[in-house]
Image (cartoon, rainbow, N blue to C red):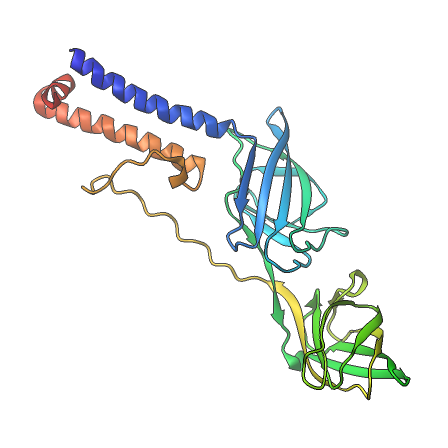
Length: 320
C-alpha cells in the first residue's frame, strides 16, 4: 500500500508541477516576440486591468536594417479591441486576426528605431498575447510601362544645375509610398538643396555618372493613376545632365503563406515521449490542452489495465 501511495504521490507532484508552470504563464503581464518575417521585434505590456478589460502598450522595433515605410502589421489577436491610440485598425477578423497600421506622424520606422501604440481591450478567460505577427506590405519595383520620367533643366551655371524631375503614373493602380533610384550621365558632386523629395543616398563611384536614391515626402507619398509628382533640386555638376537609368518602387500588399497546423500527437506511437517544457508549444492554450490530454491518457490506461487485472489498484500493484 505504501508503494501504491508513493506512485499516486509522484503522479500528483507531476500534475502539481505542470499546474505551477501554468500559473506562471497566466500571471505574465508582458511578452517579447520576433515577427515571423524577422524584420521586427515586438514588445507587449499590460499597463492596467479592470472588469474584463485591460490596457496594453505595443512597441514595434525595426531590426530590418532599412527604413520601414508606412508600417502595417498583422497580429493573431484573439481579444476585442475597443479603443486604440497612435495607430488604426485596417482589417479585423473578430476573435482571430487584426491588422494594425500607422497614422500620421509615425508612418515610418527608422533603422533600429521604434514606434508605440496603446489600446483598450475586452477579454474573457485569460490574457493571451499575440504569438504571430508580420509586416503586411513590402516594396516592389513598378513595371516601367506604368510610369514616365521627365527631367527638366531649369537653369545651368558653370558648375551648378537647377532642375526638376517629374514622375507620372500612366498605369491603372496607385503607386504607394514611392521610392526612386536615379542614374545620371554626369557626376553630381553634391545635391545642395531638394524640394518635394528626400535624398537617401548618392553614389559618385558610378562610371561617368552618379547613382541617387530618393524617397517621397509626406505630402506626395502616393501617385494616383493619371497624376504626377515633381521634385526640384540644386546640385554641383560639370556638364549637361541626362537620365540614363531609373527604377521606381511602390509598397504593395505582401503575400504571406500561413504555416500548416501542428500535427496531432499520436499517443499510440511507441517512440512518443511526454513533453512538459512550455518552450515546446506555440501558445499557452496548446500547452494546457496537451496537459489535459496526458492526464486523460493516464486515466484511460489505468482503467483499461485495471479492468484486465480485476481492478485499477491491482494494476498498480502489478507494476510494483
